[in-house]
Image (cartoon, rainbow, N blue to C red):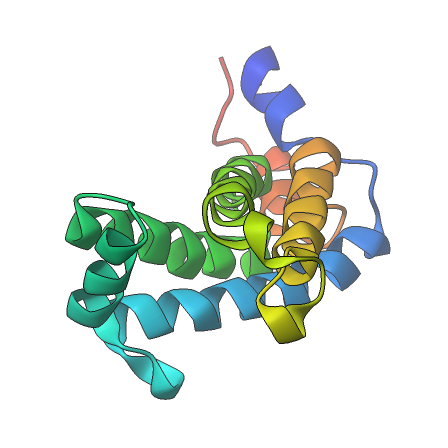
Length: 150
């Protein structure tokens, strides 16, 4: 197998990868669904884009599309453990932007729209970026197949 791909997919996380990936992936996918498709009481791309533009993230529609796609598709990828490190990194970046741009001046707790929630998601996605998907992931499955033989 190509060494780079093998190193990228490999993870010693075991069952802990699954325990972290599933809820974090679901949370992110649900939030992405709000932004992209107006699911779960969300505002969809138009409404989210208008809000993002109002807080200085412009162009708002593009920023909503990027954030929503990162959260939705990255969240699904995390649940499956598919390209976990990439999905984790993209969502860690998305959460860092949310934390620094939107929540930083609002205090700590979620009740005041503070950094608490974004910080928790940033920490979890950073951990997944570093540790990988674990034994019970599609990454592990792909690692053990002949797809990447040189």
